[in-house]
Image 1 (tube, helix red, strand yellow):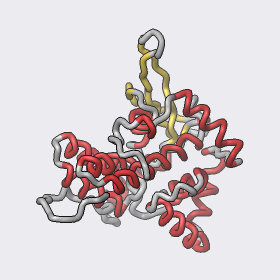
Image 2 (cartoon, one colour; image 1 turned 60 degrees about the horizontal axis):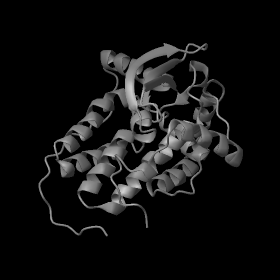
Image 3 (cartoon, one colour; image 1 turned 45 degrees about the horizontal axis):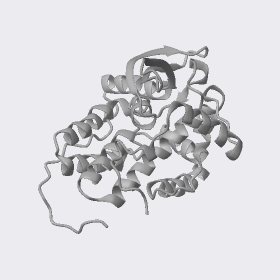
Image 4 (cartoon, one colour; image 1 turned 30 degrees about the horizontal axis):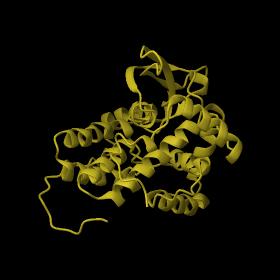
Length: 271
């Protein structure tokens, strides 16, 4: 039995910046897992695309969707990397639709928001925006089990992101599967405010997002800020391919979920 709380504001589901650093140190020794984007990403991506890995990928994906908490952070990160090998991995194309889920929740259209989140997760099961907005919609619709499942999946992705680097400079940036992930990592996982978002490149010319994190000093209340870095090069590469594909008219774009026009339906409430 889990906590039945608003996933937007439940303190049980969030870490402070100090907590994040402690998590990285503790889990690094506990799980014996180290990841360097420049050294490991291409290797893990090639391994994920190998035919003999398909069964393991599907098994771990099923465990992830079931919110299996025994799934290791390393296994979640490998799932995220495996997603970059899929032909419909086009995170920038999907971003506009993902944003609509939050707007629907803000308008109180929770059933529509949930339906849209479900349709996004069908084609992109690691959409952090769809997971957190879907969890909130379920909370408002009195579906605590589904809300908890989606919140757990969101947090598993964020834990894997936290384990993928230190975020302190471009060469030690966190891994981000989607451009939606860095601001959500700060606002929903670390419970801080998001400031300016810009891009830079590391020493290997790989694209990195720079996202400003703001929070009040706990003792003085004075505003504090620092920049966190996220590797986004793999996603940026798909944007370049999308432009090329569209101009050459060789490929159809990834399927985009439409905002559903849902009406009230009768059904059983979750307990």
